[in-house]
Length: 88
Image 1 (cartoon, one colour):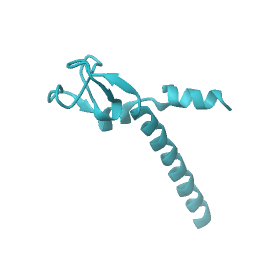
Image 2 (cartoon, rainbow, N blue to C red):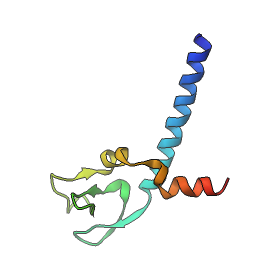
Image 3 (cartoon, helix red, strand yellow):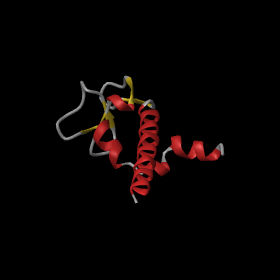
């Protein structure tokens, strides 16, 4: 039984590492700030109510940082995942 539990933990950790890598790649996408129009990596941006992205200088208190909104995404629909599946 202990061996089975350890295998599950290893599998979960591998899955978490894969998800982390996917989000790191997603965070490298470049998007222009809707306030100042300067391009930034998504990992450095905030998401507004109208699904627009803002930099740290242009954001307000109602917006969510990448670390928060990226956890709510359906990773299966991200280009980083669909391109990987396409190459198999």
